[in-house]
Length: 121
Image (cartoon, rainbow, N blue to C red; front, side):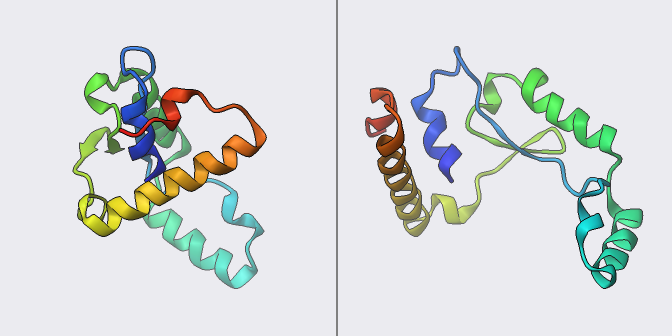
């Protein structure tokens, strides 16, 4: 939700901001789990997970290939996804506004925040 607030404040001809989910990727991150969970995750990864290279290609696609039409959008499997209905709902918009305001307040305590980020959209 933070990114949905950030993107409209950034000129897409200067910086493209998009979000992505590469899905489940077969990494060693689950190796630190207890054995009973590690076994389950290993089985699920064997059936469902992408290779690390495939996950990397999706990240590169979002960073290098996706054009201005992806600015402020969520990508999954290289495709722009529709914004979830909660994010568009009044309750979602309220959460998004509060998240932005709280984050900017906290950031202002530790660094100078550019005025264009503090301005309302």
